[in-house]
Length: 332
Image 1: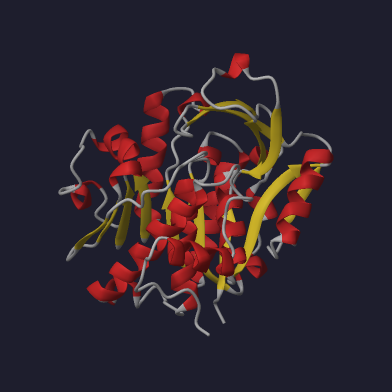
Image 2: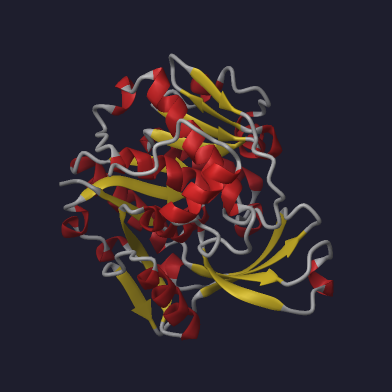
């Protein structure tokens, strides 16, 4: 049964400041959190009750130990995670403004995840794969880029849904053009494209999403997150919207990942195949969008990324507190 979400990409440690509203150079102390967008999505999906599996590489160091321990506690399958003594686990230091918005400084050249190779990816890893999700951070020129191409090929052969979140981090690229061109190179592989309003403008020069399928014609579903302006779900037939939820955000690290994870979780929960994806009704898609929008909002009320991803029970309490209805949490 193809009921597993597989993610491939970066695994790192986020150092989150204990103070908000100051430049990174002025922060005195941090707390460490397991991070990396694919890791966040795998953890959130597992915490909601679905199967998830990680394809990455971490260092044979204390930070790699911490990532694997954190994922294991979330019930994420880590059997395909490699360890290496040659390269360290990547690090990211985060600064938060008064609204919890982030600014990143990365230490990942070289790092362990970028050196996972295509030879490390095997067909047996994909036997239960229902969805493969990836981002752009590890698509820089590296062995990991080739590992992505092989993983996408094997997932497609398995009939899996392919999901892509550009998750633009310009400081990690040699140039804006290289980042943009690589994302546009990989976008046609995706059945589901999750993108922020800022990323949409960066990639297309458009602030309006009306013509988004002219830029990404191969996508079946496009998820557009707009922060305090809410979120959209678009197909070639429908354009759906959910208004923002008035939470007091303290840390937006991983909010987009929470949104993507919540959407992918619902597809797994309902057993949606790649063939069924284009035929989902407007009503079902609206319910999926409402769930994802709320789950992302909840994640901003806690520090960190993996730590901030709610379990089913925690999310149920959040929905009750904000009087949000017409959301299906589980299949039980």
